[in-house]
Length: 396
Image: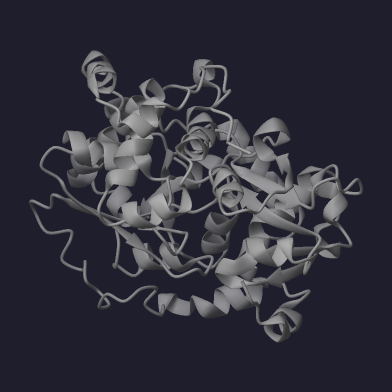
């Protein structure tokens, strides 16, 4: 894939400054993050509302990350709620802005990007912890010996999809004992993985699920895996504070998140079925099947995500449960490095209000749905991932 190296050069060393973030969101006069008309949901608070629009942070829906949603759609786990998934543009805070601006109801950004929005005055509340383990990884050339921890990124060039993703990497470097101010960032848009493969940077931000997807695309790297060492949380779902404080919407959000919880449970019970269901979705299936010709790699991608979503299950109160200790560690870290300029207690922006209700579902029925799903021959031929986290081995 040919890259515009002149553009890369202009962005080398750039960092998303607080001034740029705050200025870009001043008074929430936000540019539309995707093609829909501004204010499309301004009437959403009307009595009887029964819809939720969720927006992706990735710029695409053609991934396996959202398998719980597609499973829930297939089995009717959302009940009569009208649901929609939308892709935002590949700009760090675009999905948060979409929610604040009334173009969507729920965003799904990383803790680092969420903190950018908090700093900019985007008043959202995190209500569903999808990633219980840190989902973010650092990719680098295979066999390279001078990168062993995130601290080793100081003084090196790190390629990102968007310069705003520096808000994800900076805290990782700081947590590992390094100086985030010494990292040089390169923004390459959707081609940031190939940019690393072509030697235009020393390392790249990656994440679970994408790690296997890159392998399927012929991008073979070594990795530092966030889930193996980081104490940070990963991506969560956020809604407007006005919605969060509106008791009339509690039932809607509880039922909606219950659908996600049931999809997560199904995926844990039968990861091959969850992968197949996602790859059969007409809107994204053709692209996914083109990427994952080897269905073992597809199941590996899904299971990488499922492991992060489940986290330390014995220490959680169910799907979606957020650890205030983990969030406090993260918030303390980003305050120390100046990414957040004021101390914010975790419970001011993180809530488990909907978790108990969302986990009240018939697990035996979901298990029966998962067990009874008829796998296509190509998925039945893939070894099932094991509960200890070992997934099917991708074909060489």
